[in-house]
Image 1 (tube, rainbow, N blue to C red):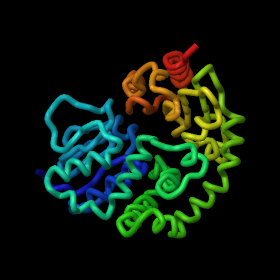
Image 2 (cartoon, rainbow, N blue to C red):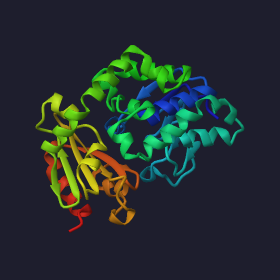
Image 3 (cartoon, rainbow, N blue to C red):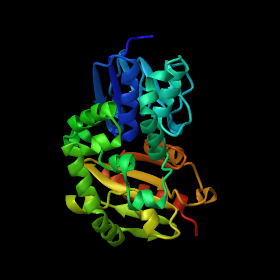
Length: 302
């Protein structure tokens, strides 16, 4: 197998945990945090790259992923399977090679990452997040844009050293956690004020909001406990002047029979993807309103 020189991944708790695990068994010279737009724009992988939690890119040395919509029908080095997290796929891949013992000290991190990435939350997790659930809220999905790449790298090192409490004791993450928890009530008010509802579908359009209110409305799961009977949340966020992000999520407290179609596969029509119950895409701002209309129509129960 080609030597791994760099992990290329997105930016969330699953990506961070995957980096921690891979560094237990591989010598990694670097980590690149990438988003789908950069991949879609023609980003080139090289043989020393291991791609994790993102779509396969021709030329990479290895690929590890768990998104249904990213499945490919050709041979590749690595592993793709349905699992609670990409970190779990990484674990399974190396465990099948007899390397499971290398991950024993990270069993709690891996278990909690499975929980967060599959949204296996209780209402208490959403209303009063703690430990790894809380940390998951503190990771920027756009670290290059937000200038938080070094924070991601720091978090990887802190996880290598100890559990969630160790990371949350660091001044950087202690400050972020304090701000997040202090803003929870304000987030509830902002979400109630800005949410549009169409039967069982919620739409949070953040394009016209200032940065402070946008941050307050970012919580992905609060809407599910604030709006009874809501099954699907559609969120629109400006990425940059020429791109907007759309994410779609299914209420983790709703029964499965209220989900009318596979979200990740549905979003392929807009160049996106994801899982059965969650996915995302990006597009030009002038395409957003029509896309939201189609998404609402597809998932609304009259």
